[in-house]
Amino acid sequence: MLSAYASVVQTDLNPGERLLWTGQPRRGIVLRPSDAIQIPFSFFWCGFAIFWEASVVFGGGPIFMALFGIPFVLIGLYMLVGRFFVDAFRRRSVIYALTDQRIMVYSGVNVRELKSLNLTALPGLQLSEKRDGSGTILFMDGLAGRLAGWSVNSGSQGLPAFEGIENVRMVFNLAQDAMRRAREERV
Image (cartoon, rainbow, N blue to C red; front, side, top):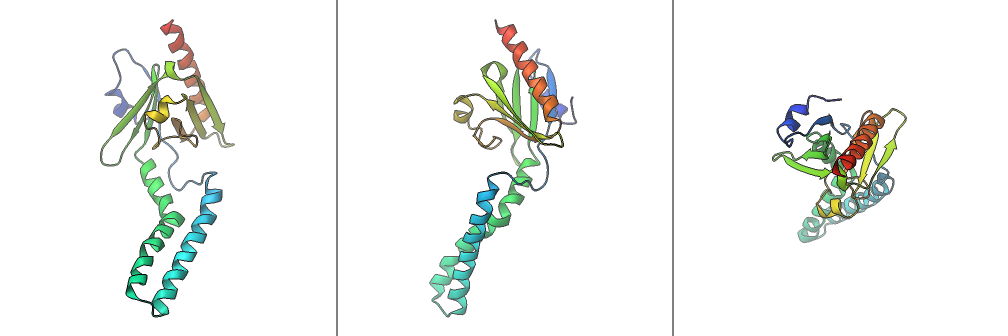
């Protein structure tokens, strides 16, 4: 199933390579399992930083101490709410593609960055599917993906991933079939 993003991907295909699927991650604010720990910590950090800053400012503390607390308040506000908006903005520019030879992840706001990984290099896939049919596919590639810098568009284990996509089961089946065929052609 190809989408409007196919035209972006077509220019980067190798001769004879066939595009099987394109898509994007879920848009908007997304909560992840790690937020169960990060949100309470963010409340604590931000609350303490605001308490500190208010105590110094309204308690008549030295100007140096008031200035010293400002970065901590800003960090706390970013951790509490800002990171969700930055993540949503970043995901708007991400495009995923699956070909008969590789997975491709486009990212970058000002500069388009392409990361790809051959299907024959992948020992396996991991599917995480929600009730609405959306989900994430982790491309389990051992150490290679982590060394290649997949951190921007990677799953929770630092592996390459198609995160938060619709019809994840269909894409998972396409990827499995493409991996099997790529391995057969290689032999």
